[in-house]
Length: 147
Picture 1: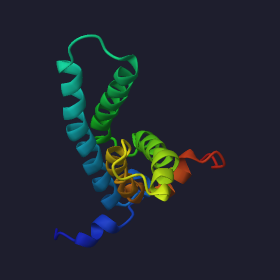
Picture 2: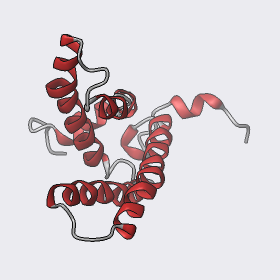
Picture 3: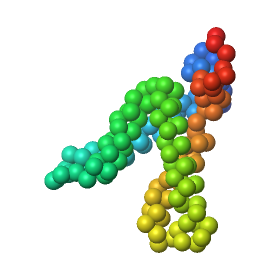
Picture 4: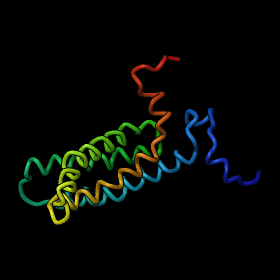
């Protein structure tokens, strides 16, 4: 059996509900990045923290650690864990629209406390490209027909 690069771009109804294999591979890579890179940072912070936690910061670190742990499941079940990516897209785009965009429009984003977070959140646009949106609509639409 010869390797055919075109196979990764084809839909296979028998596997992954017809989602292209390239999307599955990209989703797994994204979950792996979240699991290892985000997990390394968040678990290190949680395990080495000394003294009492600031409640607001503790919530942030716990949520991000939860994201990394669930991303570990996503490496093995990429379509079942799509809701975590949808949440990530929603909160990051919302933050970019509500916080970063007004600062950018006023010309005050650069040098502001929001600049660093903006650069961290902007790659979410790549996540938007990786998501198999047809599958998302078929699975999560309130108007979908039951099979």
